[in-house]
Length: 304
Image 1 (tube, one colour):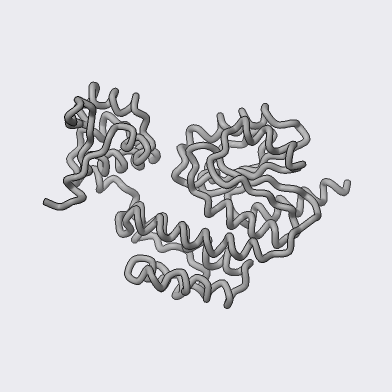
Image 2 (cartoon, rainbow, N blue to C red):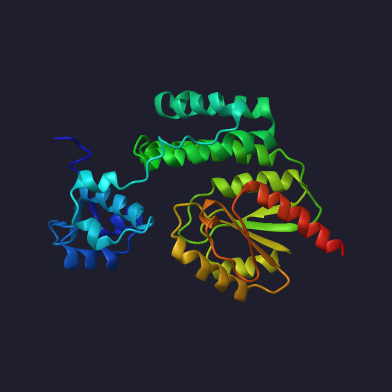
């Protein structure tokens, strides 16, 4: 028997793997008959690997607006067919770097040992600014698309993320420490473990002379509210990937706005912000370029 398919996971492990709470898992089991866990020697729920994969897929489809009751009833083939496909709509790579990005995508999947060196070569060739804008940003989008359409496994995406984050952190650490204004505190909210967008924003803002301090990912909202004054932050910058549940973004940002002093600006960036309705007291910045323009605007307004 295949070792992977024979694995079973506890309900706590499934919660971590799928980001579906234990209460949701139990409710679906009762309401829809799926998942259908086995029981271990102690009578505790344990979930076969194929059910965990299906739950992951259902969670992704729910983020695209599908209802769980409808998804639970579909056969596996039909469920997979609902995922957005990107092959008919090519990724808009920068023209001069399209070949490099395709090669890097191939390296992630087929020759992962060579990928870190390939990224370092691109960084040395392009410099940090162009590397972020013309290699790392479109490459991250392309990796996400390949994960969505099934041509990349979860481990391919995780490997890409970790190695690219390593390259960016090293490059940021080598920059001169900016002592100027404004001071920007960067992080993500709980449930947003994707930190590449945050690192890319930090790199460009630091290159533009901002004094950046990063808390990493998944900082509780009240801790952000305490940290911002402690760091002397004039701006709190949050990153939201396309995977973050869109329906939660507005409420979370409004809560943070209430928790922070009025004089501290909030910037919300990333692909998850692209269709977000305006929120009073929050500046939404879907692209890295929007973030750089916001920095220039902030400095101009501070001079008035």
